[in-house]
Amino acid sequence: MGTGFGKMIKQAKQMKENFVKIQEDLKDKVLEASAGGGAVKATVSGEGKLVSIKIEPEVVKSGDVEMLEDLVLSAVKQAQDKADELHAAALGKLTQGLGIPGLGM
Image (cartoon, rainbow, N blue to C red):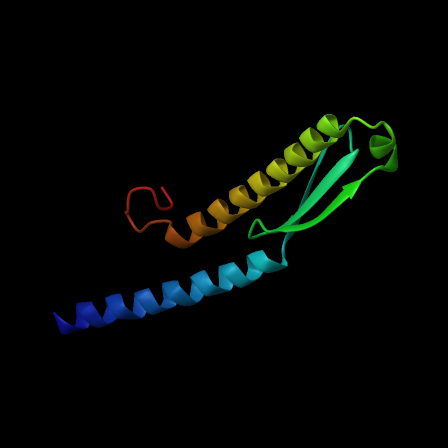
């Protein structure tokens, strides 16, 4: 019984190390999305944290604040969705084959 438990502890440690590495790798990823045909661009990290917003001057000149707000929101949401997909894929690789429902299946 001790051998099986020791193996399980070793696997848990390895999984934790892999998880930390994945988190660090995600910090270095940069994902971008745009709205309004590129009028607004949002950039997020692989963790989903907003890094930057770029707005084409023509959009501001139009004076349509409500449209600009919608474009910013759309671009940010799309970029964050990309980060969520990247994160899920990375974690799926980590948990693949564990047999735990909802993790890597």
